[in-house]
Length: 302
Image (cartoon, rainbow, N blue to C red; front, side, top):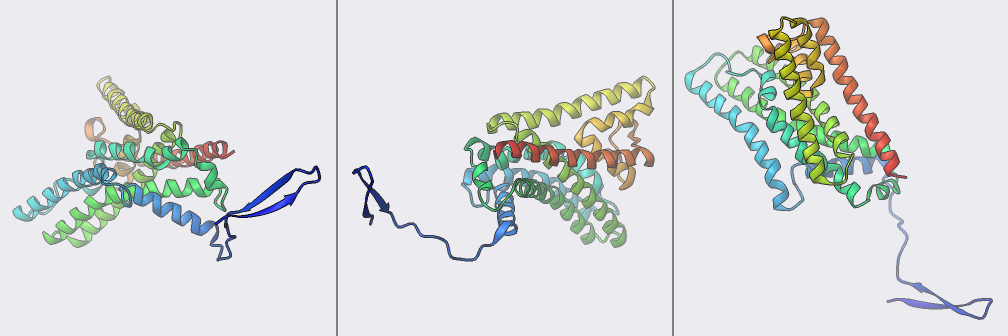
C-alpha cells in the first residue's frame, strides 16, 4: 500500500513522495558469465521452441525429423541387406540435406535476434553487466549449437546403425569423426551468415526471406558457373568459383581434407593447396560475421 510523505517546498507548494514498496536487491551478484550462460541457454532452447508455445515447436521439430528420417531409412536398409558400407558418407550427408539446413537457419536466425530488435530490448540487455560482445557470443554460440545438434544427430543415427550392422569399427569411427568436423564448420558458418542477415532488419519475415535468398541464390549461381566453366574446358576455375557459396565452401573443405566426395562438376574437388584456401576462407567469413555483429549491436545499444 502506498505511503505518502508530504514534503514542503521552499515556494510554498506541497509535493509528495510516494513509497510504493520497491526494495533494493541484497542477494549475490552473479555477473557477466552467468548472464552470458543464461542468454545462451535460453537462445538454444528457443531455437527448438522449448519453453515457448506449441506453434513455435512445430517447424524446428519437423525439420529435425525430416533430416533424421533418411538416415534412419539408410540404416534400416544397411542392416537388412547386411551391407559393408553406408550408401552415403558422413561428410556427404549434410551437403545432400542442405535445403533442410538452410530452411532451419532461415527460420531460427531471425527468431534469435529479430524480436530483440523489433521490441527494442537490446539496450535493456546492455543496461545489465552483459556487454555487446557477450550478447553476440551467446547468440552466435546458441544458433551454432542448435545447428550442430540438427546436423550431427543424423550422423549419430548412421554411426550407431553402422555398428549394429557390424561394419568396421575403426573405419566407421574415423569417418564419423570427419563428419562431425564437417558439420561443426558448417554450423559456425551458417550461423554467422544467418545472424548477420537477420540482424539487419527487425522484421522476422524479411529476415527469413533474405536468408533463404542468400543461401539458395548463391548456391544456384555458383553451381551454374561451375558447370559452365567445366563445359568450356576451364576446369581449373571450378574450385575457385566454389568460394562464393556457403555450401560449396563446406563441400570443398570436406572433399579436400575429410575424405568426402565432391558435388563439383566431374566429382573432382579442390586439391590440398586449394583446400587450404577454402579453410582460410571459411574461418575468415566466420570471423567477419562475428565482427559485423559486434558493430551492428554497438550501434543498436547506443
